[in-house]
Amino acid sequence: MARSPGSVSLEVVGVDQPLTASGLLAAVGELAERDADLAGIVARYGPPPLWDREPGFPTLLHIVLEQQVSLASARAAFDRLRAAAQPLTPARFLELTDAELLAIGFSRQKARYGRALAEAIRSGALDLEALDALDDEAVDRALRSVSGIGPWTSTIYLLMVLLRPDVWPVDDIALAASVGEVKGLGRRPNPIEMAELGEVWRPLRSVAARLFWHDYLGRRGRAG
Image 1 (cartoon, rainbow, N blue to C red):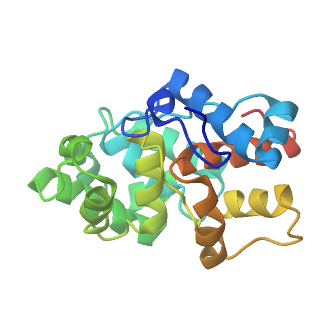
Image 2: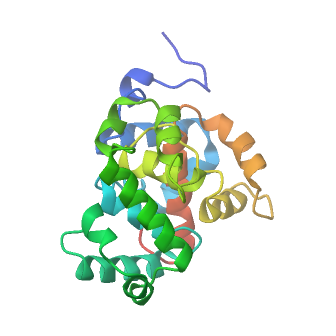
């Protein structure tokens, strides 16, 4: 049966399952057929990486470090943290003093966030291993029950760690900048506008996000 231009071959893409490398490629093809601007990204830079991350406390803590700073500075602080705390477990993190965390690169606020996260995991209030079995909304509620984890952090964990296929981080500055550039808006759309714009790429908004990030990096001469 023929598909309408805006439809998605769910069987091919597997939108009810975590994204895989092959699923990503299929989804990129689907979106490129539906949106000429996304097809242009693929023509310029090829398909985007999966950008998958290992589940668990270290990755979630790393995402907390990435809040409102450059990825490079967050990576540098995270590398110093891993050198100072081996292995990087909630218990080991909680042993670090304020002075040690400040020297590593944590602000006082992010040190509090890191401790809240470590304590939530250690106490069992947050079970990261159980998130796989939850739907997106339940994952979001579980993560955001911890102080310092807001919509952006939760969404990035859903998108890059749990590899959910239809997540759209409306608060991500680089994503919004790329949407504005690719769509010729002349400015960066705000989160409300981002939510509205993202509707057209359901149920593959996570794939659309990867394409826009890919373009953002490509325009700035940085590898994806």
